[in-house]
Length: 296
Ligand code: PEP
Ligand code: MN
Image 1 (tube, rainbow, N blue to C red):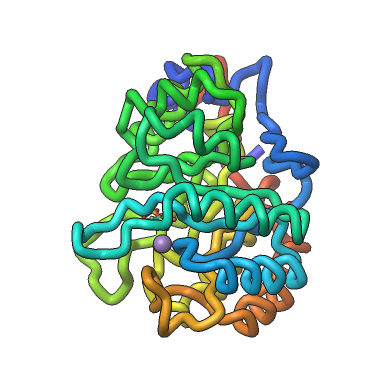
Image 2 (cartoon, helix red, strand yellow):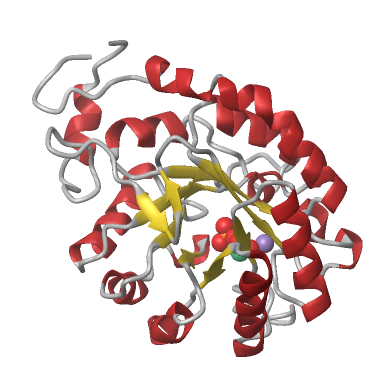
């Protein structure tokens, strides 16, 4: 055992449905026949936004062939600018369903409002709460009442305590199938779009029972950094990734600069292999939480 940290215990144990406890040390989130938080490293990939049938089907086939298990694609987009593309809505959801039928990939897509939960749950296998919605409590409550697993992204300026507080809101309302996502936080650094808080992974894996994945695309903001950050995520013990991929990133309607081409995604997946082999070691090296008492 490496380290005990009583302070974390005090800070996080109040979120009793998502914190690690003597009774429950890990939750496996089941998405169809996929287990997140188990032994496998689960990669979710696809475009930022669903733009057309051709774009989505081509991407779905390419990412499935490269080893992704879950297709991402926003049909409802929370854009920083009101003048940007806001997503295809229901037509986009229908394309996601079609891509699932064609490839067998499960679907993760964003839900922005509590009112949309029932509709989107008809199409999604995993409901994404975007960074901008992490503290939308009426949305979190509605997701708590729904049967579908939830991917909860860390807010742009949220602490890990706040992230787990939001997870607790979902769990308190009845849904404990929650995956956490570190997607970079806003700092004074401008060379990258956000700052990937890589330490968030072992901290969350220590204090929480929930699986943790990393989004290197929104963290980096530039595609050349995505494979190396993906590698870092594997090495620190993440349970998977969510990555943006587009057939022609330069023509993407959103987040093209951070989207990988098919070839780059294929290479990223192949290059990850040796790092996945040492990923289990992260568990051994990670600090251990002593739930009842303990010292620094
Ligand atoms: C997205 O996944 O395309 C997205 C908008 O992510 P985030 O909420 O992390 O900014
Ligand atoms: Mn995006």
